[in-house]
Image (cartoon, rainbow, N blue to C red; front, top):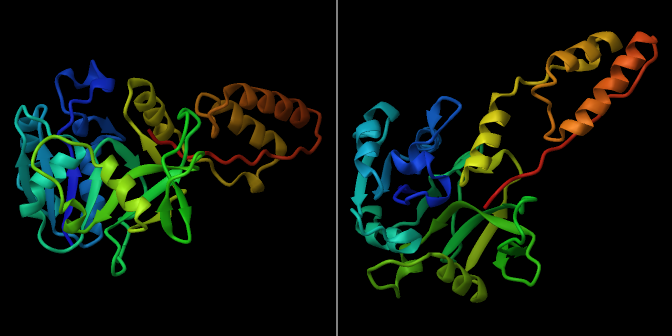
Length: 282
């Protein structure tokens, strides 16, 4: 299997950050988003990756080069100033992707998702990885029914920007600029699009606000095992790390810390709060 990373976009919503660099080179946790994807692809045993180029594409070539330092062979599909969008970009790169199913990743996501080992059943044209629709999104994209992607009036899931396609998925397309979304809808309606849901770390870095939130999240210190601490030690740890709460709700955290300190210094026991964080997408 070969992989393609979609990296040609202008990143309009990320301006002014993307005025001088392509969005694929925006850094999170000390590495470009593109580099995070390349490392995961290499770890999955994929050895050839196609990257489409557009806005400031030369910067990507300078940064990534031949791919040797990542243990990969990098092939570039240069769209120049005529950026072809998602569908057109993939269609344009088909000669580089071969005749077998291939993986496609949107460059502007951040995730700890291992590259999925997806095998397409006969008659299935593609497989989408979905995530629970984030709070900031007004609606989802798709639902799942017995492993097949479906459309509905109130879809629960959002496309994660990770998919596997057969080349035949694009069989009826003409060269040019177009989105892959109508093709997804058509395949879903025909029962030819499989799917799965990922519930681990996933974030869309599509706006400055989301990028800032993502950087803050990955910079937070890992919470230690508090079960072996005394109430006072747990309270002090939370107080010292209150700038990096394990949950985005600062108000809730402050209230909990105040109660923890009050209980600790009174020598009373208290229960820690278990929190789960949702998944984000755009």
